Amino acid sequence: MHRDHQIFIEAIRQKKKVRLTLYSDTSSRKARTYGPVFYVPSAGVEDSARYYVWNFDDNKHRPLLGLAPSEIASIEFSEEAFDPRGFAISDIHPSRV
Image: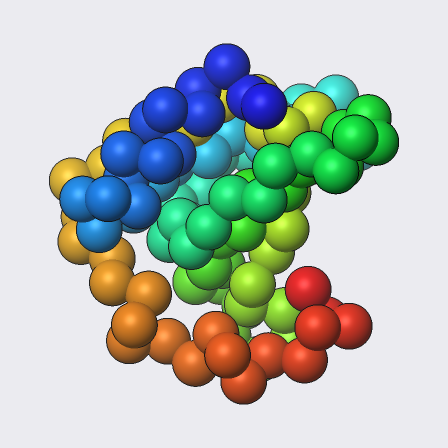
């Protein structure tokens, strides 16, 4: 579980977007705004928990991202509204998640 987990959960409850700072391969950090969709706790395997977010930058190939806590540097609350019911999450094939 990420140290900013409660921010993610509260954003889901309030239907707000989150600003995630992600670690990149080049040891730099990238911050982007995402729509929080759901959280899946660890299944007993280290780093198997996932934060699922809607990626507004990629609506065709992989709009639903599953991020491990170790990939996320920070989670910040946004005041922008986000209602996942407006997106076709159920139509995404599981192999693409």
